[in-house]
Image 1 (tube, rainbow, N blue to C red):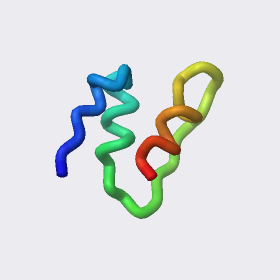
Image 2 (tube, one colour):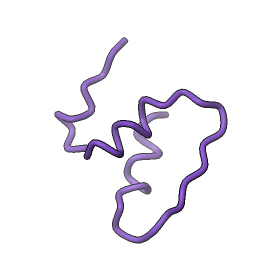
Image 3 (spheres, rainbow, N blue to C red):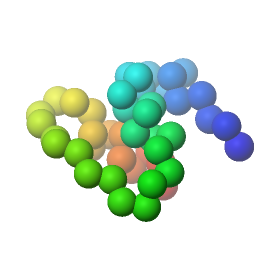
Image 4 (cartoon, one colour):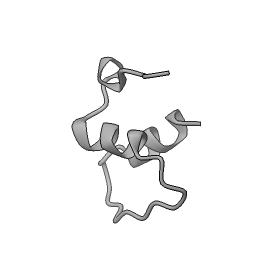
Length: 43
């Protein structure tokens, strides 16, 4: 199933994170980048 994350208001880098199906992902997190919102939406 393909989900169009852009209609939910995600930014391009958040969509790339959501579509990455790697078992382990590492990112440098800073404030106000939307990672806290992006991460749980994939579950």
